[in-house]
Amino acid sequence: MPIAQIHMMEGRTEAQKTALIEKVTDAICESVGAPREAVRVILQEMPNTNFGIGGKTVKSLGR
Image 1 (spheres, rainbow, N blue to C red):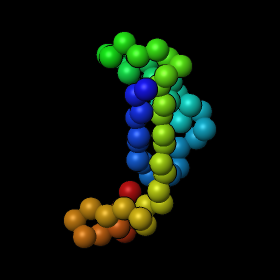
Image 2: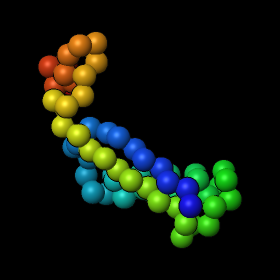
Image 3: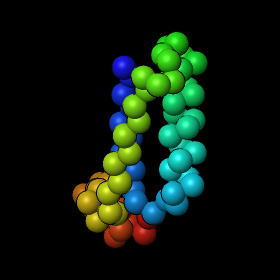
């Protein structure tokens, strides 16, 4: 059972997340031949204050 875990900043719409799950599932099925029912996709969203680049939060960098 392939499991894809994706970490990203919060702020995407439900439609965007649904599309991402569908496309990642398709990519896994096509590349490793896994049956669609066996693929798991986990999205973990975080606030931009909980991620840092170069010693600064993403929020403070204006992203």
